[in-house]
Amino acid sequence: MSGILYEETSLATFLFVTVILGGAGAWMTGRACALTWRPYYMLAFYLLILSFGVRFIHFSLFEATLLSLHYWIIDAVFVLAVGSIAYRYTRTNQMVSQYYWLYAKSGPFAWRNL
Image 1: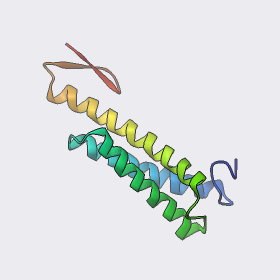
Image 2: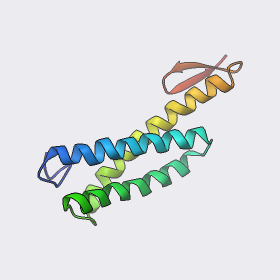
Image 3: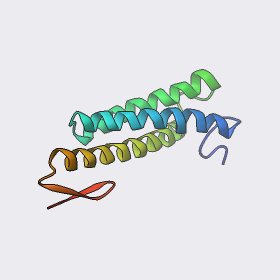
Image 4: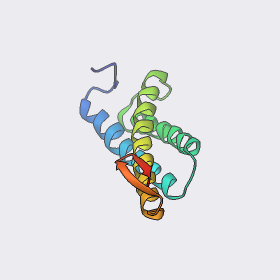
């Protein structure tokens, strides 16, 4: 696994920076974009910026390679996945709570017409 998903000597470093810090940041970014009714392309833009930040934390704190396309793509995919899930989950809750006469929840990420 080392070398494919992360370049540090420890899995704990990858889990802490990418999964915990990057995931929490991505969740809050997705939630914030949904709560302010921003379109998805703006969320994707913000999450790509966040993925550069996650890569910088790997570089500055744990001496990883800063300009590594492979590891940046891994960080970006994870951040985009978590942010997209948060965005859709929050948007679904918004739609069914603000437009309760029009929509009902049909799952954690979707709504249906009444």
